[in-house]
Amino acid sequence: MSAAVGLRASRPAYALFVLPFVALYVLMLLWPLAKGVWTSFHDHDLLSDDSFWIGLANYKELWSDEVFHEVVWNTIRFVAISTPIFVILSLMLAIALNRPGRLATFLRATFFCASVFSVTLITLVWKLALMPERGLIAQAFQALGIPELPLLTSDAFALTTIALVTVWWIIGLPMILFLSALQQIPSDIYEAAALDNTPRWRVLTHITLPSLKRAIVLVALIEVIRQFQVFPQIMLMTNGGPNNTTRSIVQFTYEQAFMQLSLGYATAASQVLLAIMLIGVSTQLWLERDRKGAAR
Image (cartoon, rainbow, N blue to C red; front, side, top):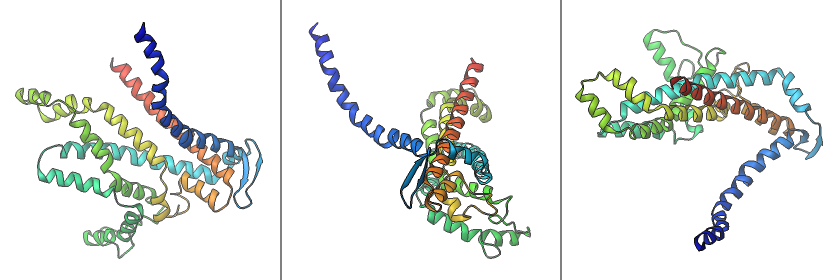
């Protein structure tokens, strides 16, 4: 009886441990989210700080805005290009470098260190490398006798080029996540497979990849969320060009808020981005759950 009374008495004390997290969660996430939704229903001019309730007018204007349709399609294409490359390439790197030795350690550090560099430095290096005629890539094409490709100035290549630069830049984080997951697989399983002379391909498909299912889903979700928010590398490398083929939703939001000074319209665009991200993540989780159900 006394123990039960003591447990009830200590419950408020338990709540005190959770209170700082809840307060920060509400202050840093829920309140800005609610404020953003509220602002999206207003015509808010940043210059005069005037705000007028207009209901769904911002969303109706977005629905008929051809430029916004383009930036939504550009962002979805960017995610569709970059996310599979991130998952597959980082998984391959993790499997290749999941071994002891100085060379593997050096290569792991090299791949991860690239993600530490600032986006300004990365885009400057790649803009120099991709310069027409004088850039490193152009000179390599000339040496191989291949016609030079307008990688940043062509409607067909610009978005893919930025996606590949992004992969080169931040491939280190998903690689480290896969390495961590690989090191959680019991070594006894691999030893048993070696005793049975199991081929490497069979070990990969029947031991390694099934053990990494959760890590693959995690990396895919992280990259979908990150790549939907692509902005600085596009801004610095092409500024949304050529012909608006690389402009993203975040860049559109930035321009509407700080160049057109239309905060309500920009906030409505950001709410659409949030909705698209939630739909994408929910779809991916649903597909993964459906696969697990079918496997059972």
